[in-house]
Length: 151
Image 1: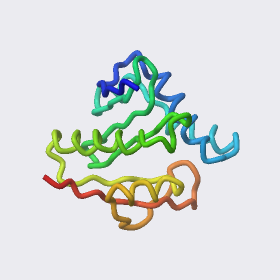
Image 2: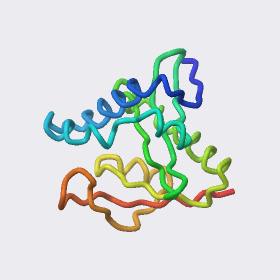
Image 3: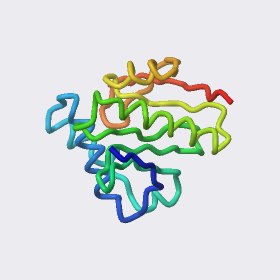
Image 4: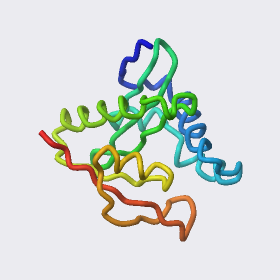
């Protein structure tokens, strides 16, 4: 595999949005749940232009992507194509997440985690600091994590 990290471009919005939905569906959520998440998982041209967004690729195949919302100090998106989950690609993408955070002079960042992804973030060094209400489902609580960037 020839893995490279590239800055997302505005022509990739549909592919990134589709990847996010496929990645969320990996956790066996039903179609109704995934459709309810569609708006929150849609990456727009405006979003890419205003938030550092990066794509991990093998040649031209998207393996995953991440982005930061610098205004709120959080990792806004981190999704992997389901075909590479469990292959160590998430760890490789995480290295780029941390390196990017360092380059943005972030000392820490928060993560509103899917409950299924919490163990991954904790394994990468994040700590659970509480819960946050889902923006999609009223009453659903999501793990709130924080990662301290070590320099």
